[in-house]
Length: 416
Image 1 (cartoon, rainbow, N blue to C red):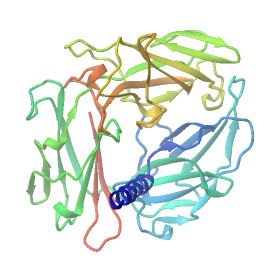
Image 2 (image 1 turned 180 degrees about the vertical axis):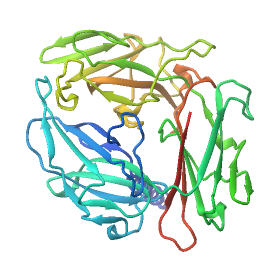
Image 3 (image 1 turned 180 degrees about the horizontal axis):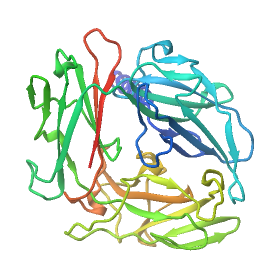
């Protein structure tokens, strides 16, 4: 009996912990195409400089033409994306919440939707400090009715980061893995104990499942910290992302076998995918998992003129994987491993399949395999893995000095 109670308490603690970690994600089924990025830039990560000129643009679609009341609040987070203990007045200037007043009804679309849009910082809300932030979007002035969350970072550049990616690792030479090495130059910035005050986080293609944290420097040399030949920083090279383009309803473009109007909506049938069995890396252009909304026949604004399509993915294989689950990986699902991205297996047809409702545009995706008992995905099982593959690594350097109450983001570096 005691063991059962302890198990329940542990499970509850894990659930609470998971709920307190902020991720960019949609929480209601009537919300689609949540996007957060830099205004005027298509593919940059949502990272802006403290007191800089860049603005964040956050947008999403609600799948109706009914006017709804949406608002948002901004939360400061620790390096692990849990909420910090700061009061809002310590990290924000102006108001703590705001209403979303910029919206546009979809025009000539088979799926009706309303596009909502807002920017940060703005006249009402400005950032006082650096670090991680989450925007919580809610309905009817009720924070309990959260519909989505969007995460971003504000950096105050205080250190220099130099990084390289190579195929020569402690495990193998120019095979299936990549080694990330980097140095952090403090440039006179005071850090008394780098081992305890600095927190380093590394992401590959903005993925969460295989991100690395808790890294210690391999060498401390006065004003420079070196992270070289660190086994924690060996990543699966993977492969270039697959891609498809559904920008037009009249012609099947890259990766699309057929676009069909099946009243009352359009459906896109992608080319059946194949397992990558070649031992030779084949270079292919991709944008490391990102997507772009686009409508070729539009006149003014793809955000409100692009339609939604039912997009059909298929991966023929005679037998399913019995030792794990298969997912679709990419920014279209915010790199989350959940039911939206999990593929199902049809034994009669001999294939994995999934159908997603996606807005017109261009998309990147991969097939991610997650072994039983693991939360980390592997690309190699379907798409192969090559040291030559182009991946985007992002290095975040956080600092919390002795007696300080939050994690400052003092450096960010991206390298391919």
